[in-house]
Image (cartoon, rainbow, N blue to C red; front, top):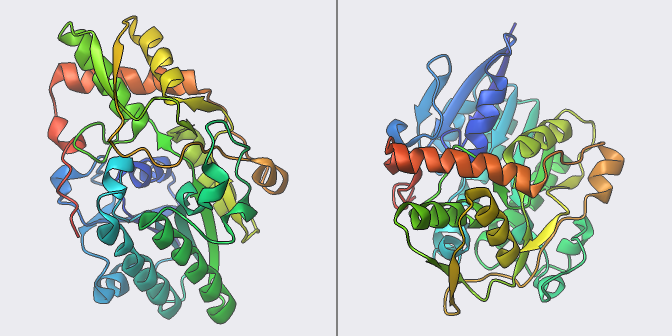
Length: 337
């Protein structure tokens, strides 16, 4: 009998890549759900069962979890810093999705539940300087996460923990740190920094312009994890026997200005920067400490930032210059809950 796997948020970035990872497994049956219309799914396959449903409705969660063995929840209303700072209520409503899926998973006796959390859960006091020590899993407490989105993620982590304790549901939780790569949003307001900067430099080169807008002073720092490493880390944690919360991120911390320089070298095109100090900037510095996940799970990233950006740049350039399906990866308002 085939293992039934439900992927929620399958039309999005990480969810779509996870579905792709399972496609060649003949022992699995995939059920894919997203709130977006099918034409806006980043990846959609004919040999999976696909549903366009709002999982804030408990009846929909009951429908898609029936008979399922494993549940992966990537479904949430999110985007880059510009989106999450201006849509806090929208982001927090995603708590209904995870709560409904947990309840439905218990009712249908699903074997295992995966929740995708975020580095936005970490205490803001540890992220006030540019180059900071990597964040350890315990640094989420005492709680002071990113307002809106970070609070939803932290609360949903606790829900997973308590559903495991109270109902015996086996759960896995990871905190993603700035995942990027091909086949994802690169325009429209929800894109993250790597995709946004690749797009800006591609368009500057295409139109022979010498200046791009940069949010903040460019000295704010992050670490960015390539999507292939993200999927590998996700599966390593999921398949383990450990129910702890783990970082899935890179320890290669760079400033936005440094990332721009890398993209300039990939593009072979130099730009000047128009710093927009009034734009959303988020915390001053953030990076992952992977000591615990490496010790307990044995996972670590394989791709350097440059290697991942090279692949991402090429893909975005193909979309922009080829002009095909650009709306799919650039619409910012189609996921309103």
